[in-house]
Amino acid sequence: MSCLVLDAMGVIFKSADDVAELLIPFIAEKSGSFDEVAIQSAYLEASLGRIGPDEFWNQVDVPSALEDEFLSRHTLNPGITELLSVARNKDISVWCLSNDVGRWSNKIRNNLGIEKFLKGSVISGDVGVRKPDTGIYEILIQSSGARVEEILFVDDREKNAVAARELGIETIMFEPETGFAGAKKWISQRVL
Image (cartoon, rainbow, N blue to C red; front, side, top):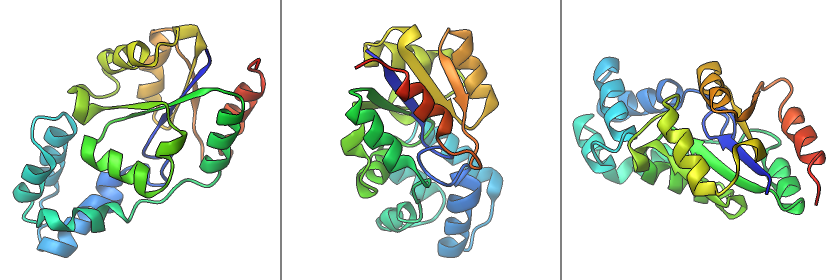
């Protein structure tokens, strides 16, 4: 069983650093606060599942009722829907592996229509460990049911790709200029 594993931010979604690019500006706009260190710290705690999303919003002085407005600022990377369709047509299992707040990740995937393409997801806020910690890759391997040699992992951060490679997972670095060419080539080599 071939398994394609995609990072969320910077691969599935256009924003590579959603905290710096989307979250901090959103909080500054809604609360007037711009304590970047406090925001980063609260986000890290939420992305590890140590605090819930409502507590995160409370810590940054933004009403949790505005969560969906923040999440609506995410967009898909060009070509992702086509890649997901190609993978589905080849009967390749697709998983999302992301450092994020579980509830946020779920909402974004559903809102942008890609959840239907995914066999599953492993989100740091749900499992309590973040990339590049090997624990999150081990959870992915166990959850997916795929053998290490059947997995291709696509990420836009070298440290995450290195950690996956150290476990024997084949990796491709995502580059916006080349898009999903490498992943499509890998899919085309899979046998139906």
